[in-house]
Amino acid sequence: MDMLDFTKSAVKLPFSQKCILILFFIFIFIYFLIRTDVNCVTNWNVPLVWEGTFDPIVIDAIYKKTNPRVGVMIFAVGKYVSVNLLQHIMEHSFNLTWACKYRLFPFSFFKSCFKIALNEGRKITVLPVPSAKHWQEVLFGRMKWATITIDKQIRNEADYLFLMDVDSLFHNRIGAESFSRLSAVLHRGYYKNTERANFPYERHPESRAYIPVGEGDYYYTAAVLGGYLEDIYNLVRYCYEQSEEDSKNKIEAVWQEESHLNKYLLYNKPTKVLSPEYLWSDYDAVPADIKVVRISQLKKNYAEVRPNGGH
Image 1 (cartoon, rainbow, N blue to C red):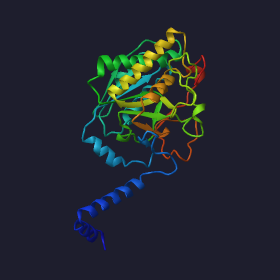
Image 2: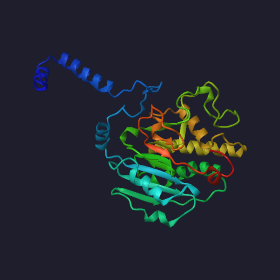
Image 3: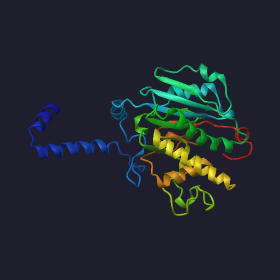
């Protein structure tokens, strides 16, 4: 029996048998898009996205019907800034399927940003902000200026908003599989072989970022995150306000805004978790479970960009 004969036979089946047949093909489709070497679902039953767990053509086609507006905030931090790198991000982020608007935050203003040539459907706005003496101030400033900018300027300009650092190199596609109400990326350093008690959460009860030992789901990076604009606004405002409260009490969380982000995501679960494919590092070898590196962080001279210590 060839496929045509099989299809004709299927049409003649009773309704109940047709339903069983449809469910069978759905099962087969899902089965071949599920990897057995990694966890593909969180314990609160949302997708954990890896290469091989989605069909890029299908998922892009579904979202394309809604014609989403995608905003990207890029934090161009002092000595990290390179016009060529900025252009790379703007040409390659979220593949060419999506129209994107960029908000660039250079902590040292430079006119070269206006000379960046973008692909059709992409726009850039440069929003200079005050320079900072220490890299920790830069990190806290990201949440502050993201909060202010969403609130005052772009609330009606985007459906999805992604935040990322300027030292991000795109290697492979990022598309609609990353879209959700709130998408967070697993930190490459702690996604496997690290017990929950050993996650680098803030452990001092005096900090607003405090997470007790025994609590927690994953450890997320703050370098890439995205979601509905309003949900991202709620997240960055929370991190900014909690950081301010700590600062009033002369407290600095162990990993600055990333500590507050992990506290927020513990009690406001992401609706999609992205694997470390979405932010690897040029420092690290790529293990077998990372089939595709989509974004990597460039190597940096930390003695130069963070002279008072830290990674």
